[in-house]
Image 1 (cartoon, one colour):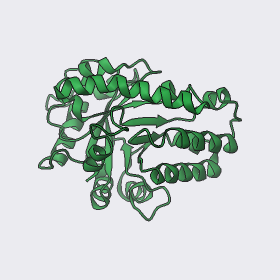
Image 2: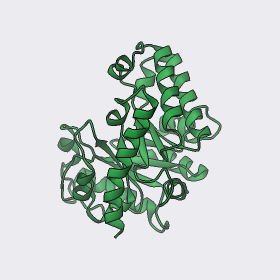
Image 3: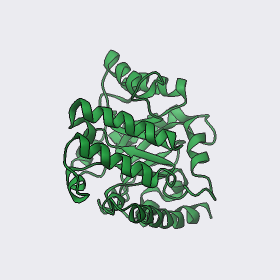
Length: 282
C-alpha cells in the first residue's frame, strides 16, 4: 500500500522525515531568478539541479504537471526524466495533475499515471471529483492494483473554491463533506491508513468539516509562499495532523540555484513541520 511507503520514507529518525513532501513548480519567474531561460533547456536544467540538490532530503516530491506541459512535447519529456531522477534517488513522486473525467477518458488518465508500463508512471496523483467521486473509480482501481494512491480535491485554498465546495446538497452535507465521506468509505478497513487521500489547503482555516474518519493521508499545499504556516496545520487538521503531508514549493525553490541554500531551506521547513508533527504525536 502507498501508505506503508509513505511511512517508511518519512519514519522518525529518518533524515527525510518532517516535511515529507516538496513541490516542484518550475514557474517562469523561478527559471528567470535562477538565471535560466524559460524554455525546455532551462526547464530541464532547473529540474536536474533540484533533484541533485534535495533528492536525498525529501521523502516525496510533487511536480506540477502544468509547468511542464506548457513547454510541449519537450516539457513532457523533461517531466518523464524528472520522475525517473527522483525515483532513482528513492523518492516517491506525487504528480499534481488534478485530472477528472468519465468512462474511457478517466481510464486513460489512470493508465497514463498509475500503470507501471507508462513512461509517466508515478506513485500517486491528484484528482478532481467534480464529475462525481464515483467517476474516478478507474483511478482508484488502478492505484489499488499497483500499490499507488489518489489524492482527491476536497477543500482548496483558492478564493473561488468555497462557492462549490461549501454548497449544501439535499442531504444537508456540503459538497466537500460528501467528497470527504466517500473517500473515507474507500479507506474503510485499511490499517493503519488507506491509500486514498484528500487535498486540503493549509490556508483554508477552520471550516467545520469533519476530517476525523478519512482513514487516509491528507495533502496540505499552500505552505510558505502562499501564506500557510506549520501552525495552520493544527488549526485545519486538529487531531489528524499525523496523517498530513505538508507541502512547500516556492518558499524552498526561491533559494536556488545554490545547492547549499536549497538544502538549508529544505532543512528549515522540515524542522518547522517536525515541531507540529511531534506535538501531534505527543
